[in-house]
Image (cartoon, rainbow, N blue to C red; front, side, top):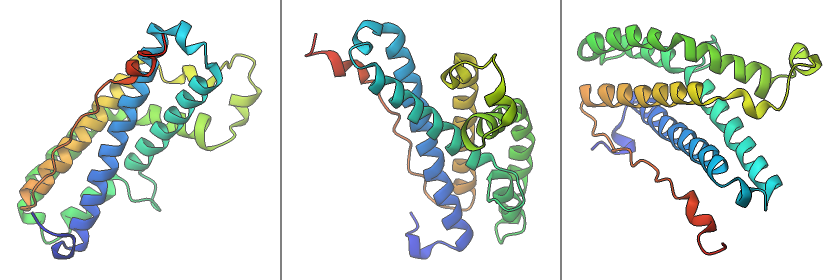
Length: 193
């Protein structure tokens, strides 16, 4: 495994992306587990509704912002596509060219969920969108990440992590395996009830 000092600048950026992707996946799982717990243990959750609600809101906000940052395609950002473009022009281009082309092609499979994440970021998390706040049809923004989109976001994050691992392996860096979070939230109420 290369130490931090042994890595080139592009390898350091890839390592930071790997950490960010793992954090986003942790965040997605935490959000999913808390939502499942609320559905299964609504009576217990009602013992601390403000705490549970605010925890869910914080996880939701963090998830949206983390993933949006990873997939940001604006010219001033350093999202996943820009990383791939930099890799195409790097000293690793000859080793990574085929992988990068496949990853860019696969990225388009996730275009719908990417657009949904951008919408969530722009309308519900990052900006005070007038149409969102002035509409009488809007209820709590907590309902904005439905089960289906949450699964798609999780799938996108897992694919990003797999892609980063492919890139790291291709240029000879060791990967640090991802240790998936366990759904341990039920232990919260084991000794209380």
